[in-house]
Image 1 (cartoon, helix red, strand yellow):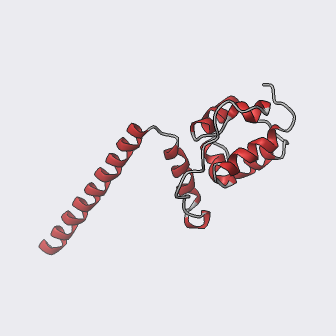
Image 2 (image 1 turned 180 degrees about the vertical axis):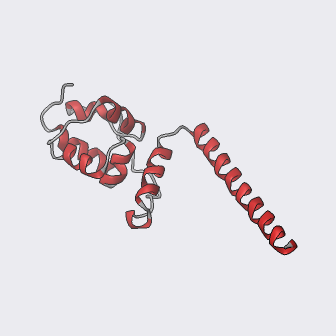
Length: 134
């Protein structure tokens, strides 16, 4: 893949423009923080899957690769996500993957979580009834 000189600095610029930390932005691309750092330092090059994934969250891939903007800059999303300290590593990965979904898929996930919560509540009620009957 062709990368124009300075692509790694433009990758960092795009991440910062969108208001994301390295772990979160890397998560969007399916990589860990250390890999994101290596990309931004030019020590490693991302693959096409990574580029396609970060494009879905607003990164201007053409700009990163060539230095010329193809799409107008979009402002950083508001409000910003919670700080990294508020998320476990597992939560960070889940949130990053959730953000890559389209709205319909997010609605399906929300429905699924609601059903799990309902099943958990029903299970607790059954256990309480069983304990009272014992």
